[in-house]
Each structure stands twice: as C-alpha cells, then as structure tokens.
Length: 177
Ligand SMILES: [Zn+2]
Image 1 (cartoon, helix red, strand yellow):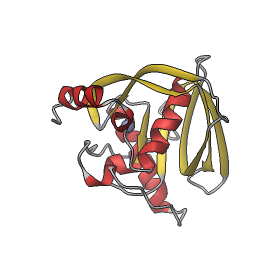
Image 2: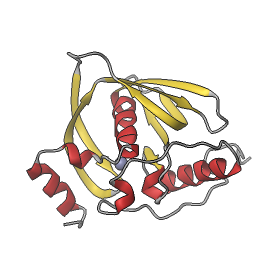
Image 3: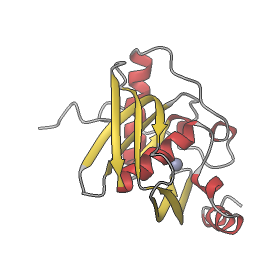
Image 4: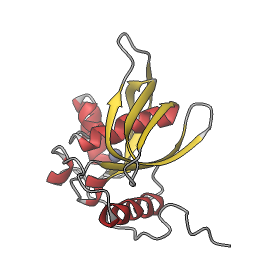
C-alpha cells in the first residue's frame, strides 16, 4: 500500500539550479506565510531531493529565494532524520568547538566532492511547514547537512568555504568552470 504521507509523494521534481545562478549567491528572504503555497514548495523540494539522490535541498536550489530547506539524512549513530525547516537559525557550540573533516558535495555542484571542515555537532531552530517551532540537533552527516543547508539560505555554497585550488577542482569537476 502506498504511503500517501511519504514526504514528496505529492510533489513534483523540479530542475535544480547550479553554482553561478544568482539565486544561489544571495541571502534568501524569510517566509511570512505558512499556507498551501509553502506546503506545495516543501513537497516539490522533497520530490526534487529524492529524484536527485540528495540528502538535503534548499529552496534557492529550485530558484526560489525563501528560507526553507529539507533533509533526509543520518547522524553519527545512523539515526535518520526527515524534516522540513522554515526560517531556520543555526546554533553552533561555543569555540573552541570540535571540528570534523569529511567529504561534502552539493546538488548545485553535481558530481564533485571535497574534504570540508565543519563543526562536529550543530543545532537548527526553526518552524515546520505548519508554523510549529522545531529544533533539530545533529552529529555526523546530519550536523554537516544542517550547516550546509543553512549556508545555502545565506547565499553560501560549500565550495565558497574551500581553498581556491579545491574550489576550482570542484567546479571544474561539475563542468561549471
Ligand atoms: Zn548544497
């Protein structure tokens, strides 16, 4: 039996824009209305993320400059989190904080992966698509994803955090340079 409530089941996979598209390089605007348009956007975001085999997707990757992201990934213990975050705020531990270096990629720089340092734990506070407050705390891939996706909403891609040589290699690998 099909599960009608599977995130993205009612959505439509849309085109994911690539590094260089201006919508990825400027901060997104806060969501002010929690209604059917937002619900539809979130469904399309899940559908687009799953179609591209991603673990996270920000709204501006679909060309929509709104502060929304979705994710489906595991923490360091293999526990899975599936969530949509609206107007998320990233909270990192106080320095000196533990860092982890691991392979990171992005659907907007397709096919490239580079070793990228991130805080080992991260918290995001925001709202679900119905406007209820939610808080997600993560380690491992989930922590990486929370930082990567909130970065997107601020107009920053992971390649922007890399040394020039690694950034150029990632962009060239994706055919973007
Ligand atoms: Zn990305």
